Image 1 (cartoon, chains in turn purple, brown):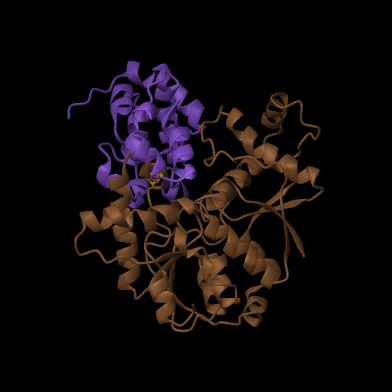
Image 2 (cartoon, each protein chain N blue to C red):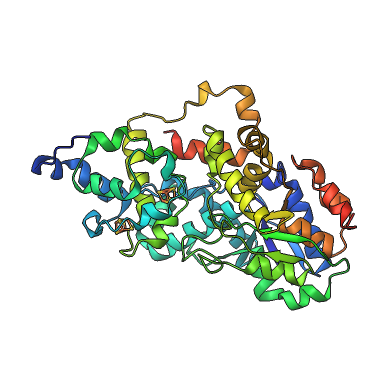
Length: 135
Length: 292
Ligand code: SF4
Ligand code: SF4
């Protein structure tokens, strides 16, 4: 994958937005990779958790907004509790999801779920899924 | 001892086995339980976005109901309710400005909540107030020869400020099972995420996690896995159907709430266990051990 880094991207409003929504200082991350090492969802991610932080630092907005990773993250907080710099990676994942959800780009389309799919899971699953994946 | 109790939605439906076995156990332990009046859904997940205050309202309203009942502590059973209620509580305690904004959205409430309710999980009450030594004295049917692996999942132990035990190696459930006369089996996947709500749109992911979690428990000798979250329970139990389809060598394993095993040990009847709500029938194992 070819990625272009530029001052313009780094200064993009997107970086500030992610910092605001997540409440995190992205530059505190020194890319040790600990978050990715313990993440149970990495096998399904196209960008690893430490890369999500790096991409956010560099303002690689398109890559992040198109990534699968933020939707396979289940906010399990394993990364958060292990990060030696105290960065809340799960909150950064949430910030990227929120940027999309607030533009009504839902990940789960409720009306497309079949009656069986909805009836087959308990309310707790539906409510938490819709809270995380719909606007 | 009297405790104010917040059930949450799933305890009244899919996880009725969790509720009934808890209420019977606490009765056997001499604890009086009062269900909170007019409780509502906690929201199930804590809102992580810094500016998203509106979703904290549901939890705050429940804490107001606790104040209305003139209580200062509320007990939860569901790990998701516990985490959400406690985290919202901690957030508004540390952030009076947000709390003031939240109040503006619910000015019909008669009580202006100040963050002064304690949110506690049943496990904390058993460990710290009743104590496992006392629980052991009330056991009438020791869970002899039963090899139980305890699965904590995420929300009982993470994040650190919210968790009720060591976040990498919790032992509270194992200690409880030892006091009930069971053989507690340790296993490396006890705090690994089951993929939670991904079960709605990515059941395959859950099947894979279930495979790894339960196979690890079985490899360590477990005959049953105990849980404390209705979503973990659904994923680890009901998704075994998909797990068996995906991994032909997978062997099914019964999943029970820790309170069902406690209720058994404390002498509760089968009607309090609601074994009919399970996908993998735990009855053959419990019969084999002579517990039912
Ligand atoms: S663990 Fe923390 S410091 Fe290390 S790569 Fe992840 S976010 Fe960065
Ligand atoms: S919170 Fe998300 S990114 Fe972090 S370890 Fe869990 S699944 Fe991975």
